[in-house]
Amino acid sequence: MFAAMVTLQYEPFQSGVFKVPGGRIGGLLIGSTGFVITLLSLVLACIPTEEVGNVMTFYLTVFGALAANLALGIVIYIYGRRRAAAEAA
Image (cartoon, rainbow, N blue to C red; front, side, top):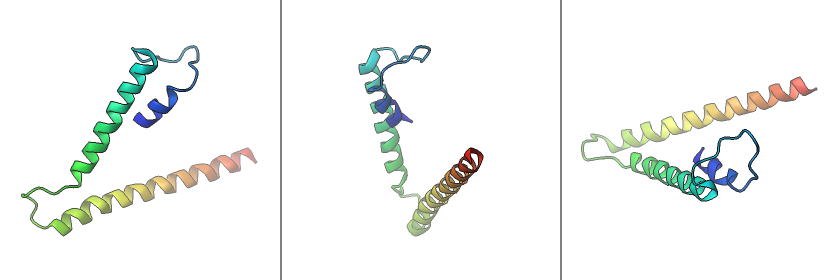
């Protein structure tokens, strides 16, 4: 979402679209800051603390949940594409 905000700052503004305070520079700063903080949070969430009893279980849980969520997103995307193609035909 934050990366999309940065990308959209290079598109021409349309009427009726919410503009971020600060114009294009403000949008770039806000989008970039949100993206970097989110990325840093994801990286830090993958580092186990000393309180973790079994590091392998920690990694399996974190990356297993990541894989499951990615797989679910891919399935939903494929289903949506097929449904849209069927409706267009």
